[in-house]
Image (cartoon, helix red, strand yellow):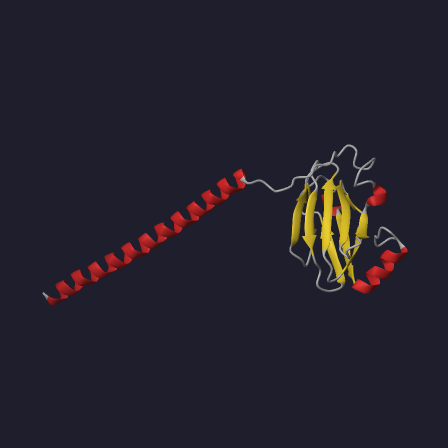
Length: 187
């Protein structure tokens, strides 16, 4: 009789523990669904604060992304703006020079299809969409070279679409910027 009572008691304890785990699992799933719903609704009703457009047909002819305006530019406040274009199958400029420990804003767009903008060794990873300007504030901690592959399939020549970001010392960049208005690695 004692073993039958022990067995019934064990079944009751196991059932109670399973109910607790099932309840905890349902609560976790409910919280995750609630978070996804909130974020989905919030993002749908609260779009980006500022969406900039650029006509992909006239990028090279006029406006901010003409070829003579591409590359790194040091502004009066000491920050740097980098303008670039992704196009099949290259980035223009191919190599970008930026200073370490300086606020940098990457402004880029695409001339034809969606391209990926990834700078390896950093958390910079976004898409360049035709007709829209991507505005990315960043800061590099130390000098060094970073490869910049297109990580969004853009066509047959996608595997050859690479660029480079060369991070140099702040003082060296200031000296280079004093000599030339726009900077790229090939200047």
